[in-house]
Image 1 (cartoon, rainbow, N blue to C red):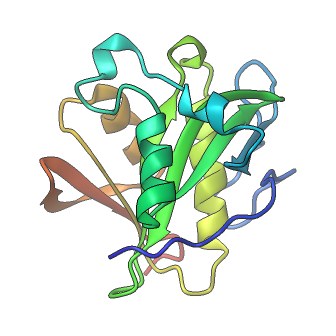
Image 2 (cartoon, one colour):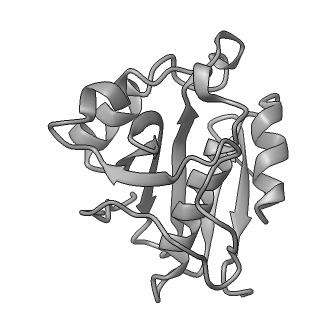
Length: 178
């Protein structure tokens, strides 16, 4: 079981420390921020949708992930903004049995892909999680035929564990070298 850890304020960094260096801007120069899902933005976040060719690997709309976060209390959904525009979704949680942090529900809207928003959003979340003193491992999984994920995650330092979860390959990142 994964326990939700709340993010209660907008998360953006002027610079990164530790293993995740770089500016929180996409290739178009827009500032990328992570925001909690709230009464003002939940509809826009729920409407985030992938490209048609990605629907075999991710949900058809981010609404599924937002509902998982709200109804099952397992995950913590975050909206991804580029400047003030909602352009994506991701979620995270912590497994209380082994202390592992997990990332899931990573989605950038079809019309906003290719600008580096997903990479920057993941780097922000990785930074946020790595700052936690109990963060030893961050895991995620992806379908083996999801080429975008297969290129992105290793470029951020994730390595395959050899494990599979629900038909997806599990990858791990150890932010403090462990």
